[in-house]
Length: 425
Image: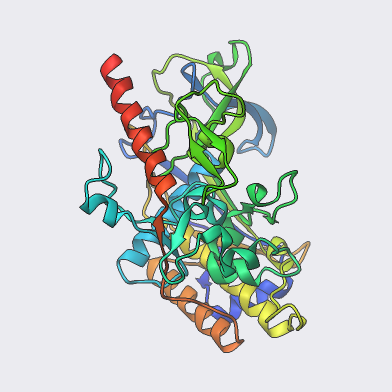
């Protein structure tokens, strides 16, 4: 795909601020090609049963005609979100950005060799699968107060968060408002704080061999956000109201009330989707396309009052929404602008730079805006400044946690099971 004939202009803070109040969305669509060149083979992700995620889509050809074509998913919405969060974390680690973080520090356990495999990387709210609602945070202890995070003042505030009052989540983990959050473990029955994913991205191979559609459909699970701290499904736990975490390990996985770690929100996140059995031989495609959309409508549903007694002001709402939009745009630019290394034999290079269509006035041709790495970082930093001027919280010092004894035991048991499984194999 050639670079757009419509001249684009740089996207700056004032433009984004105006768009946050009225526009529907920002959209980036661009073609990519294998690093080996057009027509080279790429390898999609495979899931249980050696399946690709295959589907038919309607695509318009050069003559403007709509046709059904075979498509294969190269990177899912969930996987793309993971890559955006990783890119933000790298920028934070490099000192280019300051974003509120919650950090679980396993350094003490590593120093005293309390684990078979030391955890050297920082475990943060950007790296855990469930973001602010992750059990890795919930079952850790705040260094500053000595309280379990789940019982502290921060958790008490964000558990009550909603679209009408998203300030606590904005203060603790603003990325959860961009990539989505469901605090279901905090309030069973689906009553926990829930926020829609505002930014969505996926990569599709379009025009693939029709034989991929010839095999019977069968449901599979695809998409994964791996926990940075491995927790084995074989490490059973039981509820215990006297334990600091509300649960404890049990040696009997068949005991009454025994639960898998995933049932208390520990471990990886998987997502259901259809898939089709196929030999893992890679594919060629007529085209590869990435589509990224950032919903400004979703962000406008959010309100940001200073406290429970004060209504949200228009200035604070606009500043917060603009910052969240900038956060999404910055993460997408950092993660995808130079291209993508999705997995072995699936390195993709874009045909052109990332340009964003602003979907503002219905019936009008969308205006195009350019955004590269330096502009994206400047845009976010300008938005942070605007939020601070509007009186919104923006913590640059991470909230530090240490793992509870029960959490350390769960991780240690998981590592022991991993070693045992490997030996048996």
